[in-house]
Image (cartoon, rainbow, N blue to C red; front, side, top):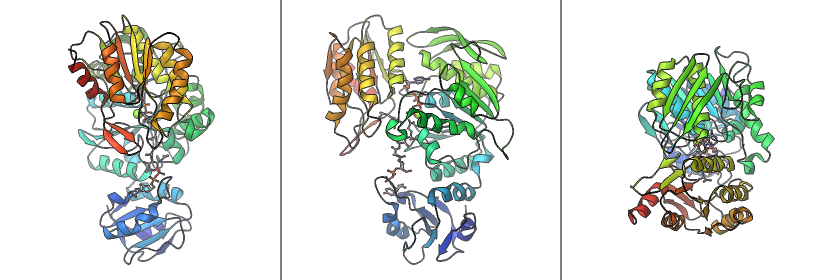
Length: 496
Ligand SMILES: CC(=O)N[C@H]1[C@@H](OP(=O)(O)OP(=O)(O)OC[C@H]2O[C@@H](n3ccc(=O)[nH]c3=O)[C@H](O)[C@@H]2O)O[C@H](CO)[C@@H](O)[C@@H]1O[C@H](C)C(=O)N[C@@H](C)C(=O)N[C@H](CCC(=O)O)C(=O)O
Ligand SMILES: Nc1ncnc2c1ncn2[C@@H]1O[C@H](COP(=O)(O)OP(=O)(O)OP(=O)(O)O)[C@@H](O)[C@H]1O
Ligand SMILES: N[C@H](CCC[C@H](N)C(=O)O)C(=O)O
Ligand SMILES: [Mg+2]
């Protein structure tokens, strides 16, 4: 990758270059730690730090240029400065162009919704791989390019990292990019330059009100993905795959000027329906009805919420003309997603489930699923993250108290907040609904898991919710290693 700075500047009205306009740019980076020889560093004024403070660092690393919207910024000799009227808007144009519009060369599948994005994306990837395609995946857990795994910082990366990743996928011969599209990403334009062929809407329930403020804003952010499916100059053959059992489904369809595939368990109007659903501890069975007839499936994943994820994923596969046989094989072979209803089995006479439920709806779903497969009692260990929607904390407390037989409230990722204060918010809800059932407040998550496992009797289920696949805990003082599954195994080691 090698482009002249002046050719990039020409894409933006009002852009001005201070320094050598003929300098060659070999990469664009938004994090100073990624800068190298020839790169152009994006000076973003963040919520925590000002990117301009790293200009000296990137110069030492050999950066060729910086891009900023601030006039009068000085850079060391040899580093050109590209000044644009609006940095966010300029990046949306310059970055996809620099990387040769990879989002138009790949077939792209975008998945949005409060819950189920990661699971649905893994299911879609499995079906496309079974069909013989080379698939890239971008989401909460990691980036995958074929079999190669790369780490992630956000569910949907910023426009620079996303375009670079998609470019890497094109270089590696990937045909399909399957990605989670978060509401933050849609609101911030992180997906500029991407042309989605198929978009899936899973559901809309409360989360992220710290950021979006109202459910209407949150819904409108999600709807932007569907706006992108219609309009002049797009490739034909776009499909919106929408859960119409969700109250916001109709709204997403209104925004999608393209083909529609609807799915549902309840609504008989849907194009794809799940019937004869049976949920067990280690799997589920169902039949999917669609224009192709009816396929019977035996799955290794369980819970009604996963039946919805399967339907959404089947919808995407149908939109991409994957055959019914391939869909069937891929789903029956699918072993689940790390940290999503993951059973920790050390031979103990009760179930231990680690799950990523971190929203009221997610927690409700997981506890209702646990109830369906639990003979005796449900013991729930959970907490809420810091620097996130505070209003969900008492709601989740109430849900845990109502749907469990015992609750241990603990810390999740407190981030910059005081964990004791977060726990108090959660406890308000727990105490409102717990009645005479046992409950405890144990801030130390390690201890909370140990206590819950020590309480469990044969036939019970211990649900450890909120952190799923995460192998870290984000504290004010830094990030430490922490893995619910490891801690559960450690605790079980003491009793089996
Ligand atoms: C609110 C929000 O979207 N914040 C994003 C924003 O962070 P920020 O404004 O705090 O950035 P900052 O830390 O002040 O840094 C400013 C600039 O300096 C740069 N920098 C920083 C440090 C350094 O050493 N060198 C350097 O160059 C940063 O790359 C950045 O460009 O820009 C960062 C770089 O792109 C993002 O990683 C960060 O996401 C943070 C981590 C975050 O937690 N975001 C959440 C709310 C989020 O986006 N979540 C969604 C959805 C989750 C879901 O699935 O439900 C997601 O897509 O992940
Ligand atoms: N379709 C669904 N409806 C409701 N809850 C779900 C659904 N799918 C998964 N969940 C619950 O939400 C949790 C997270 O699932 P998943 O990681 O697939 O969602 P996500 O949308 O990717 O989440 P994130 O917003 O963190 O990226 C699961 O562990 C489960 O508890
Ligand atoms: N993508 C979600 C994940 C939340 C996971 C939970 N463990 C927490 O830290 O709140 C978020 O960033 O809000
Ligand atoms: Mg996710």
